[in-house]
Image (tube, rainbow, N blue to C red; front, side, top):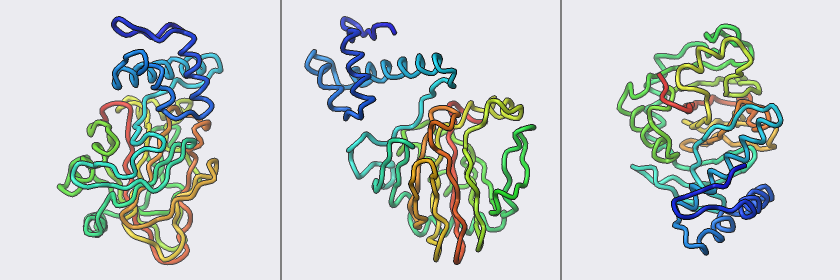
Length: 288
């Protein structure tokens, strides 16, 4: 790897290697920033330099092991960071955070009134949910997904646009990089069996999808009601389960289309009542 340079200063190889080793051991960001601050670096340039060093390391590791390259992903919070975040028009609370898989659970992303209004908007549009056909890139009904979907174009309705802007501010991710929102209803027994949200680049149907904004890099699942029983979002490879609670949301990111991100997830069956959610997928680049 090369030396990470900045105007008039640089991260020498020995310090860079120490930072990478400490990051791999789970060091907090403050520990990595401290040596650069002591050398007179500003906060922003130090963060950028460390990010560049880590990305260079991960890219080299991917090449050496035949893995997909690393993509930049939304990073809404730092480890042990603030539990209250500014989402532009409201405050959102962090109630859980995992590093691997990268998952953050937010409380209060949506108000009760917004949840009810979004359900009302979507109800007339409901049709059997589909999945991506890996061979063609089109949509197909599949037994693994037994919900109903009401789809919206980005910014199609004032409420949809408000929620999309809120997510963009919360995650510091360009609004135009988001796909259109989907609202889903899961009736009794309905589920979405374990799956990944990224497009498998080895499948022929991925090519046309990747041309429309690049790879998916993150997902936001917003809960529009609280089912009487069941309906959790489950991450089998992470041993984690996010309960479906009205107004809350679970965010997870995946920096490459590979199972090593441990973002295999499922919508567990609804045991009693029904579950309504809104899903927002985020891309590398402008979508559409």
